[in-house]
Structures are given as structure tokens and as C-alpha cells.
Image (tube, rainbow, N blue to C red):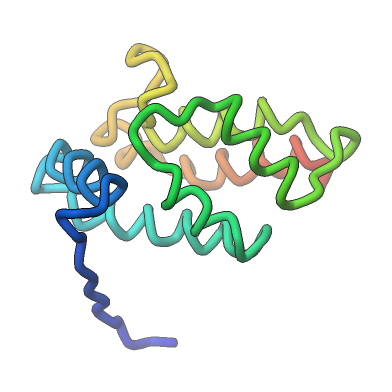
Length: 136
């Protein structure tokens, strides 16, 4: 797949989740907004691979107050995740921290500019995730 594709969508002003989504998107600097939306779509696809119901459930319940504990409980119930496979709290907290989400303290989140200049940063993230899931 060598060609880039462009996708579009509408946010509806009468849907509370869409309104909150718009607020979040508009809070992101315009300079990086396209990357943010691309990453959000990829994250939705990743959730879809776990269980096709997860993206719709999260979108329906999104009001800006979803806690990591609620997300963990939802993943457990929907996907059938087993605690013996990996500590889901560590996985979610690491993912939030790497993504620069609100649940991570600001001092723990690397600056995007610094991270972009760090060679192998994505490789390190991949290695960390593989070690959490017991892959070598």
C-alpha cells in the first residue's frame, strides 16, 4: 500500500460525545492536529482488533471523564482479557503515558519535539509492550 488516502468524517452538534470530541480536537495545536486525529483513528483500529465492539462502546460512553479503571473494566468484560496474560493496568497506563494522555502526569510525558529527535523511540515503545506481553 504505497498510496496515501484521505478520510473525512462529521462530528454532530447534538451528540454529547461528538461535542466532547470536538473540544479535545480543538485543544490540540493545529500544527499537530492531523497527526493526533490519525493516531486516534489507528488507536480505534487497534481496539477494533481486540473486539469490534470496543470502539463503538468507547465512542458512546465518551464524555471526558472516562477513567483508566473504567477503560480496563470495559476491556476485561468485552474482550475476555485474562489477568494471567499481562497486567492490563500497566498496559493501559503505559499506552496513555506514551500517547501523552490526560491520565499521565505532565512531568512523566515526554515532549513530542524531544521524542521525535530521539532515534529508536518507537522501537523502545514496541520493546516495552512486547516485554509486557511476554514476547521476545
